[in-house]
Length: 263
Image (cartoon, one colour):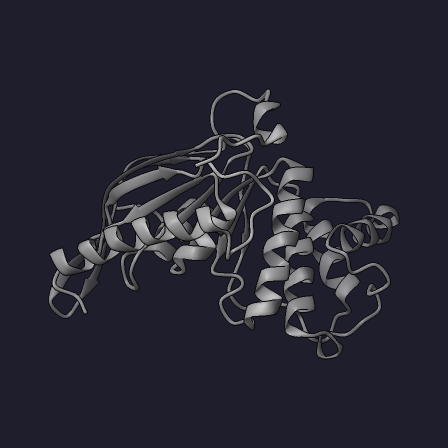
């Protein structure tokens, strides 16, 4: 495979980590007692790094993301996000339908403490960043699915966090729209130098986007294996190198599923 030539990655000057997950386990109570969902997860995300979390349904990917976001607490272990609270983008856009695209973004800016006089200018800048210039006054029902996810991305970026958490944000979109948003996300990641932890069950998507792919085993979720994606950006989902690495990762994923008796 080709050697990565990402200028952004080479130019990283920050030290430390955007997220440090150390020996994290998570259990939930149920009718049959405590159920172990995550078991001794240790994972660092470097400043400016794009990491995808991959695994079978129910392996704990979203649970881990929620723990990093601070929406829940681990049963054991620790999580550090030195840059402050991460921004979180869900599979559903979660926009407020009674607000315009711009006002949805301004809400995040207000919660961040941005002065009212500066909010519209910043919201319009973020809409330009996600290539929705001119959409400030659009209502949610006037936007396509892909446009709504762009607004959701702009709202997440409005939080000015050093770490962006994304929980299968493109899963509900058609293939063409998803491919376009892959391009947009890659561009925005490179322009902003934000760190990204991206959950998906789609192997090709994981390889298409990430610098590093982390495979979780089936429940309880453990780090089964990691891959560094040494493929030049920009990538296409149909690229030969993407396809070849996807096949290797898929075989490993199938092995994990077989080992844990899932179908």
